[in-house]
Length: 607
Image (cartoon, rainbow, N blue to C red; front, top):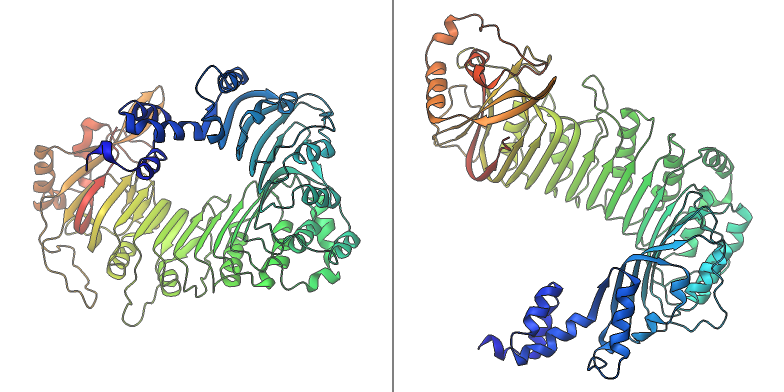
């Protein structure tokens, strides 16, 4: 079949995946292609100014131009330019009677009232709207915003964000009731706003009213909050599947007061808050532990069937011990259902800390991210309890294995590992390679790898000879000959990537000696420094030439390094690097070898 003979339906589906300029080109290719590609051009419109949109409307409304056949095809309009609240009252959008999705990126408001006319005609076709309102000082009355939304009675998806120096959109329970009276078909609500104070009486009174069952997605970005709002919303929207709760917690006083009032309250007996919650994204800038405590009081006892959980803590003064508690509490509370878990903290890792979270048995956990929590993770404990884990991302911490590992090691299906600013010893990678035979992707960024160096070979051995990589990425990793002291005195600046050509048993774990099996042609790298700017010593890495590799291998195979007790004194940075031309002076210190079974691609970012 020739391309010009493709059915109309196939051409329309192809057009949905093309950029507008490509759709226009296809529409001009042949007569048969004109209609399907021209129709998709009209289906979704992007404009950047009111003038541009008005010109399009003028073309559509001009009976002398043959475009009126397409105006009814417009279903989505995205406006990225600058417009005013007043302009929203124009008849521009009524040019497209089947408009379903409206996205306005910048609505400017400088008045304290929108002054919508009572006779404002409705936009019956709209099913979703996204408004980003930028207000200047004056507060936008909630009633006026509700009056605007009243003209869109078929809305199913609402997204309104108000950006202002005074956070100009405040909502009450009464406002929510009015909102649903105006928009009875809502299923998704996204709001950036402030929450008015409510009392326990208000919440308990509302428990007797009919809940809003249609809403399944709730996304709130709020300035501050009262704990009672969580309880209120859990009853208002019992069928919520996706909940995003972001709060900057400008004042912790209300949180402390609210938490103390909560003790002894009948609300504490709630056992089924958000009973259908599937995805939860929590973000807090509370500098205390109060917001976490309140959240746990509500969600953790409820046993909500959460499968995807993201927990973000910023601007917090909590220690690594507290983030350890958060990790353990969340894992334990949702261990039976959790599939994706991301915990992002704001704690710097200290090698002296003792925060080591223990993982509960999570049979369904597939993806785990622990970022900036300042904790140490026991790899053996993690793999033993998270048997379905396939992707692990760990940033700013320490990865280790327990001191005593008994019995036969059970193979694990981990496929992807990303370590960023993580401290780990060589034996960790040996253990990882043996247990995780399915590991295909490994990304080490600014990782610190340490271990003992053999006196015989002068080598730090990183044994991953059970692993067949599809992609290995090594970005600014640091190597040390000691796990007790990681500074310029123990820094290793040579790295060799080598493929194992000797047989390895697939059963019991082998302890490879430092001479190791035969290897293929290794690839060598050297870390050095250059002076990018005045007093700016930037670390660099380069691949050694064949001649330099020959010099290095001959050096380590000879007895010269064993006969010498010191290297020539050269200038070094605080990380232990030398200038590029002084690379030979790093030979005495030793090198690290990462040995693998097979590798399709590797990436070592070069300058």
